[in-house]
Length: 185
Image 1: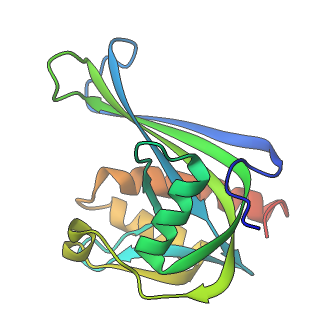
Image 2 (image 1 turned 180 degrees about the horizontal axis):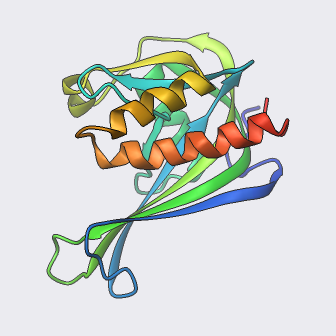
Image 3 (image 1 turned 180 degrees about the vertical axis):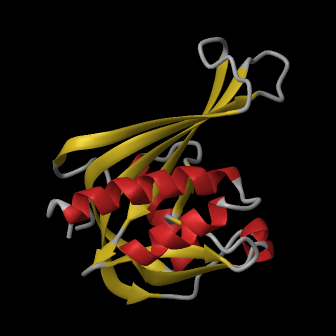
């Protein structure tokens, strides 16, 4: 039986990262988009998505569709982006909130609220089914050493890069800290 509904355990000290992109009134009227991200470990490696266009690495995941719980969204995103089968959703490792100016007149800010879950995959793999924008950005899943992934994204931050690279680099740094302390992996 697949355990998608809720995390099976609590992470002792989850991260909570808040990022402001530009001048944003984050305490005003906020339009929020909720997303989920899968943290999948294989020894000292992480399953990440590489953008051949931007050169950065990101965790598999994306927005929650109407009627989906976090686990169902994780399962769908892992299938679409990586061709992976979600076996179980583990601990909630942390959350990020990214604020930017809203484009909608009724709101002061737009927030992407991302939840990062430790996930376990099954043995079945299939061909990824990326969205059109993911194809344009050359998204390719792969296994990457944590320290190399962190360094790759830090290098990308030195030049123009998508705003999500800042978020993913901060999360990779948290994971690296936990790994170095013997808490992860």
